[in-house]
Length: 402
Image (cartoon, rainbow, N blue to C red; front, side, top):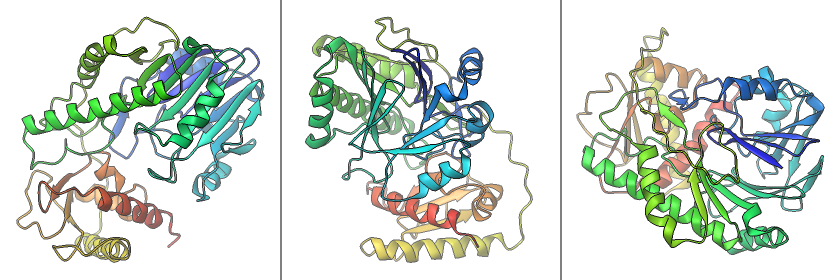
């Protein structure tokens, strides 16, 4: 099996009779505020596009924009079999069925075989119910496509993967997982100064790298690769996020201490190749502005959305000390709110709110995509649970027919 990194969490795996493309993100911006950075090489996309459709399988780990580019799948990979994990929620299955022109197949831990590839999918119930770790095995190599599942995994998942990987030489087993910021925190939280943001981000990168190495070693892998981090925010910030340098520095520090080959991937890199060239890319640029008119009653519509979101959050969470969990504000994103009367206050431009209200975009464009600023009612308090449940609400709202 030969494996090439396309970009972000996208890989091209081929064994001579079949070709797999994982988590394609090629054209569209994700969460309204991310773009691919670096972008995939055009010649790799062209070669993938020109493959016979019946020899190509598109593997989608979960439905986030940076792992599932719907338009690109239709544009480049029409007619391909689509493989997804089997989730309790039918959302991803329904979405891929609307998209597909060929078979959509669900896979779980019992496995699925296609053109001499073997797949299994594992869902960590302690983390999320709509993301999965997928193993891909061929006659000679074994790859763990963990994508955003960077956390240390429970023993039942690690033991199951280790049992399958045991029949391969260690140097033929690789664990690939995210090492990189996948949200607006702390970059678009103005309450934190640059020094605080730097320390938070570097600490987070270290936790992700350490967890990935623990998972790789627990399953008998000989390689650990960092990926699923190649995006940049379209909105500018005052933060110099030197992602690639910092990851490289962390790897250099840990490399002599672990019995693994480790490196971060860039487009065109070959998996199971000891050469890890370090590259660096600037990660912010100014956005020119979104061209969109909006209703005069936008303020009341946003307040109505916040009220509905708070009602949902009250059914899922403990009482808020501020009386409400979230507050939404439309206006200049450089203006600090006069009062922080909620656990989480989100400020964004009118044109962004209009896209959310018309369901063209999801609330995650602000919480993840950096298309607004976020303030915590109490700076040192965690709002993780609010983010999780607000995301659940956001997708329910976006998928509502009326």
